[in-house]
Image 1 (cartoon, one colour):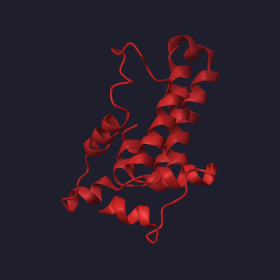
Image 2: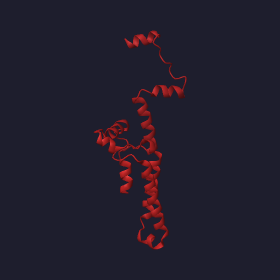
Image 3: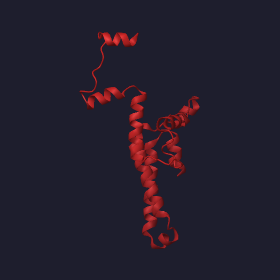
Image 4: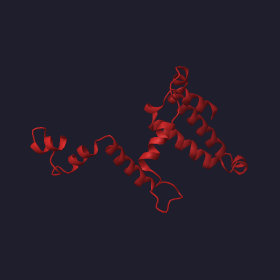
Length: 149
């Protein structure tokens, strides 16, 4: 696990995936040994986590950041600004203390909509799906000039 973490910290996702595969192979080897299976009954759940982590790294290989390089250049390596944005966008609805909660799918869809709204992209996206949505006001339109004033 230390090698996987080290490779991810240094932005080497390919090597991290190789180490995940090695670990998966090692765990599979232990599962086939009946004496080890009884001795280590948590191997199968752990192997599931390793497989899921391997898939996560593979799916996000283009987004793995070289934190070591960033750290050496004095750049931000914290994700707190991202977490803060997510908290702002979806608010408290995902909290277990709330009486009304979002499902993971619902929160994901809401996050997409809120992001479009915050980036001023919602109207264009909506217009693509519903072409008859209120017409865009042109600069030549007299109503547009009155509203701008």
